[in-house]
Each structure stands twice: as structure tokens, then as C-alpha cells.
Length: 112
Image 1 (cartoon, helix red, strand yellow):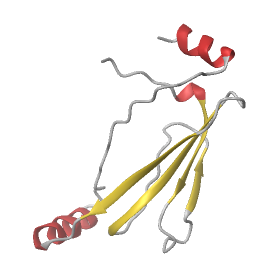
Image 2 (cartoon, rainbow, N blue to C red; image 1 turned 45 degrees about the vertical axis):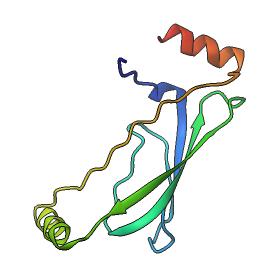
Image 3 (cartoon, rainbow, N blue to C red; image 1 turned 120 degrees about the vertical axis):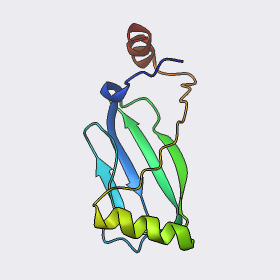
């Protein structure tokens, strides 16, 4: 399946991360819709995607974040921090729009 950039359809994305972070609710209004933070541990991140079409329901996901700090992992994390290299974890989620508004459907169809 070919990857499609649907960022033009997105108005904003809200990320709710662990409350131990100074800013635990982060809103991103421009692509790429991603956040960058430093830390370790295991906790769920709630992600809500809002679309340009105000009648289209937002999508909600929970993404489990786990940075396993076993003996080897601790060394990898410390090395990465020293080099300012990020630890990247990406996950693909396929989005299916059930009963989109007519306007939203036409935009999706035009950009296949």
C-alpha cells in the first residue's frame, strides 16, 4: 500500500502524556504532527486527531510508550543522550473513515 500524506485534512493533534511532564497536554497545529520529549519509563499516550471539517468526528488512539531500561538499554539511552540522538519508536495505524461527511468524503476521493 502506498503511503499517503493526509496532513492537509488535519486541523490539530492533541497528545496527552504522563502527568509527571511539565506540559502533559500538548497541542500540535502544523505538520508534522509529532512531539519530542525526554524521559524514560512506560505509560500510555492518548492521541486525538481533529480534522479540518468540523463535522467530522475526531479520532482517538492510545499509544503505549515503553522505553525498556534493562542493563543494555540504559547504556544505549545514555549513549544516545550524550550524542543528542533521539530514540525513535514509530507505529503505523490505518485509518478507516466510517460514514464521513459528504464534503470530507469528496476531499478524500479527490486525493486518492
